[in-house]
Amino acid sequence: MKLRILAAVLAAGVSFSFGPANAAELEVTHWWTSGGEAAAVAELAKAFDATGNKWIDGAIAGSGGTARPIMVSRITGGDPMAATQFNHGRQAEELVQSGLMRDLTDIATKEGWKDIIKPSSLLDSCTIDGKIYCAPVNIHSWQWLWLSNAAFKTAGVEVPKNWDEFVAAAPALEKAGIVPLAVGGQPWQSAGAFDVLMVAIAGKDVFNKVFGDKDEDVAAGPEIAKVFKAADDARKMAKGSNVQDWNQATNLVITGKAGGQIMGDWAQGEFQLAGQKAGTDYTCLPGLGVNEIISTGGDAFYFPLLKDEEKSKAQEVLASTLISPTTQVAFNLKKGSLPVRGDVDLAAANDCMKKGLEILAKGNVIQGTDQLLSADSQKQKEDLFSEFFANASMTPEDAQKRFADIIGSAD
Image (cartoon, rainbow, N blue to C red; front, side, top):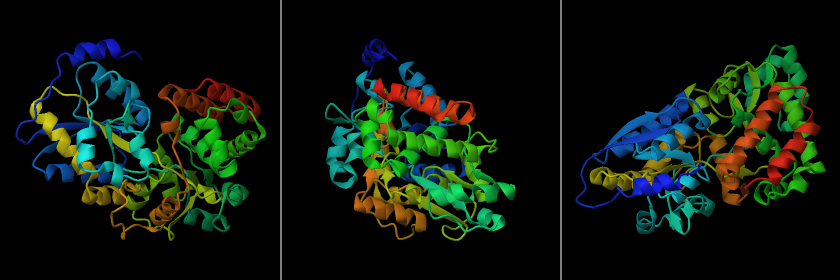
């Protein structure tokens, strides 16, 4: 995606003037459209509206893979929104480098973001050439196995305490007419499940060598072969899910039609909306109950350059509002994610969120693959695992060879 020529054309018409603050309507685009996500984003809108400005919701149905090309097309096409969600990492890298996104360094410095946003890797992911271009709003960790207590009761087996026990329980679940593992058809779901299996089975160091160092030899080696064996077990257990969206897969767990789901902590929003209680109705196993490590990826808002002075000033207000303690608590309690601030009170957190906070406090964290891989490399990985989970004839050995090739050429 070559944006620089277009950026030069657009930048010529962009200027700023910081006059008195006025109320403004800001269109904010995002892909939070499930029930739990909608409840969470409503907290952001309420907080911004309380400043006298107006949040104009620009939700785009589908996943980030569907929404991001639309967002990028609007920004590069000269029809930018006022703010837009991306995962913190490298998804907006070329937009920033092309001069299309607003520099937030002044407001970040004024409000001391470097002192309050934890871990520091979140703000590092917003920083390009020493300047800050996004406001992180949450920490989303992928490394969770969500289990339906009712499903295991129906199957007559104990709720598993780790991945091996879950695999061992699969036959009993199938005999009871329950899909062992719910996996939706969106490519990012199967790719994310593989990443989670890698951390649980191969460990943090191997994960960092593969995705951080782009070590092709490690990717082709015996430790990753074990991960592909586990991924083969996962795809066999997922046969019969027959759903597309991630929240549909989560609903199979909520309704006891599936035993479990490997999914990020945003699944908690769906359990909460359904009135289910952590520890009573469902069980959460960070690190699949094997390796209690969580990733510190998540969501951030970027602010395209605007010609409208009033809206440009309101962008500052929105950035500040997203980081404020009150907003951080209200939003993350609904979203199921962890706050980006280390100085907020989360006494109302449920058992699963408390587990995540404890792991975060211990520093048992890794960066997410969105932070470690370019969008192009991430897409190649997603395509591979989408095919692997859909095509039982692709052997783990063949898939590992393709994976190693992707890592070898990754940037």
